[in-house]
Structures are given as C-alpha cells and as structure tokens.
Amino acid sequence: MASPQHILLELFYGRWRSQTLYAGLALGVFEIVGAAPKSADEIARELGLDADASYRLLRALASLAVLREHDDRCFSSTPAGEMLHSAHPQSMRGAILLREGPEHTAIWKHLPDIVRDGRENGFAREFGMAAFDYATREPAYGDAFNAGMSSQSKLQTIWTLEALNDVNMDRVAHLCDVGGGRGHLLCHLLARYPHLTGTLFERPGVFSQGQLPWAKSLGVAGRCSQLAGDMFDDVPAADAYTLKMILHDWNDDECIRILGNLRRRAAPSARLFIVEHVIPDGHTALDYATLFDMHMLCWGTGRERTAREYERLLERSGWRFVAARFPPSGVIGVIEGAPAVAP
Image 1 (cartoon, one colour):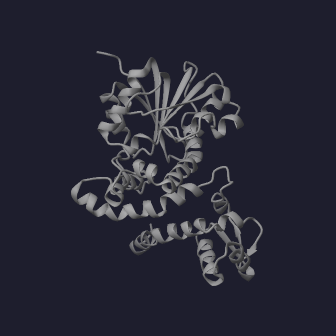
Image 2 (cartoon, helix red, strand yellow):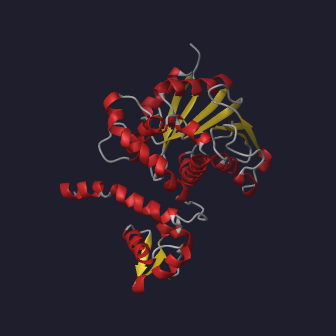
Image 3 (cartoon, helix red, strand yellow):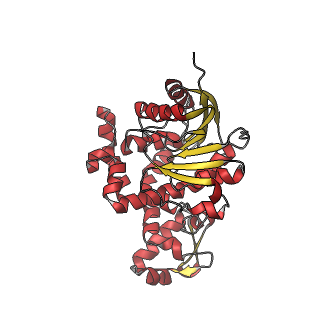
C-alpha cells in the first residue's frame, strides 16, 4: 500500500500532469512526433516554439510516458502518445483538449461553493448560461465540445459493444440512438446487427443531413437515417433506444421527462440501453465514475448514478430494470430496461 505522503503527492501533481499533456496537444507536439526519434530542436522549429522551453515540455511529457526520450535530446512517441494523434482510430486528442481546455478548467473553481450551497452548474456561474447554450453562442467551444464527444465515442463504442456482447437483438428491427452525436455508436451497432435499421436523433446543427462519417465506411448508409429534434419534446417511434452519456447531463426530473418521452413512443416489446459511468454500490476505492460525478456537479445539472438510482429513474418513467451490463474494463456500464407492465 502506498504511503500517505505518496498518495497526497500523486493527487497534488494531478492537474500539473493533465495541464502538461494539454500543452503538448495544444501546441501540436503529437501531430509531428512519431515512432522515429526526432530532435527537440527540430520539433521546436517545426512548431515555431522556443527551443529551451520546448525541450523542457518534451522532457515532462516523456516523464508521463506519452513520449520517449533518447540520447541527444531526441524524442519519439509511445503507444499511449500515438493515441493523442488526431489520425489515430481511438484518438483521445479531442477529449483531453475539451476536458483540460479553458472553459472546463474554469468551472472547477466553483466546486467548493457548489458543495456549500447545493446549487449546481458551475458553467452557469462562470459564463452566465448553461453549457449547451454557450456552445451555440461561442462556436469555438461548440467545436471543441463536439470534437471532445466524438473523441470519447471511439472508446465508449468499443466498451458498449463489449457490454452488449451477450444481448440477443433478433427481435429488434428499428433502433433509435437519442443524442447520438455524429452516429459512431449507432453505425457500429448497425454493422454488428445487419438486420437492424437505425435513426440518429440529435439537436439541430449537430450533424449535416446525409453526412454520417462512419455510415459509408461501415457499409450501413442504406439502413441509417437522421432526424433533428428535441428529446424533451418528442422522440421517434422505435422498438429499441440507446442513450449514451445523455442522462448524466440532467437532473432526475429532467431524466424522467426524457425517459417518459421514450416510453410513450416505444413499441410494447421495446428495449432500452442506457450507457453511462455507473458508480459501483458500496464504493470504497478510487473510481472513475465518482470523479466524473464531480465534473458533472461543476458542468451542469446532472450527475453520475448507481445502478439502483437508474432503476428508480426507470420505475418513475414507465420502464422496468432488466440488467446492468459491463465490459471487462468496467469503465462504463449499460443499464438495460424494458417497458413496465401496466398494473
């Protein structure tokens, strides 16, 4: 077991690590450093950086195991660093630029006051409006937000497919992905289950009609449609729904409104798959979901929840809890629901 001093030092250096990583990404380091060693001076020239400060940053990134330092101040990328390149199929670049960017860094300073008075939404405290409204007003943040969500989707899709590995979808014909971004999860589900048709349901402006990046490459364009709308007002009829990283954005009453709209439109034998960071019951050890919950406390009105808390949301919105499914990593969970039987 680590000593108390080691535990505190690791926590103390946490933001320094993530901000060092952010600087490397923002400056384009991982776009030009690959498997072949390249000198720090050459990296600095290509990126237009100060040579001495650049070397110090590269050395720090090497200490974080995203670069590897060689003799003569040369650096190459590690496997983890390769995942920070924009072209990597599982790139985390957009996610880190969003999480460690100026907006998401600023809202965390409100956490003590949020905990004192119980009023959530550090984003509104800092910028005077909710994050989704700010994304509409400030295109730079809107672009960063969409890129960050797309970046995370690549890993989340892998984990979701793993969690659903044993689920029989033979009786599902039409799947609707509510708030599905640019369709990464939906297109991969359609590729796995060739009998399915799918609808991507999103806010206006999130995607361009007929331009889902993965539909053509995965061969599912003919089975995939798009529809713009507001899930708080109505959703398309379907016999299965996915909600990936949606409900954690909203408080319980807002979630019940969303789930109620899905229930009203759902087929009698419908399936519901809620993909979220599920907090383990009886939590004692460090867990990613509890830290994400702190981010949600700062970001908006939402929260991360336990499986039991999702079960209660389902019960209050006309659904019943079926199962909680997890991929081997356990990073996310899939809460499966079905329509409740009317009394």
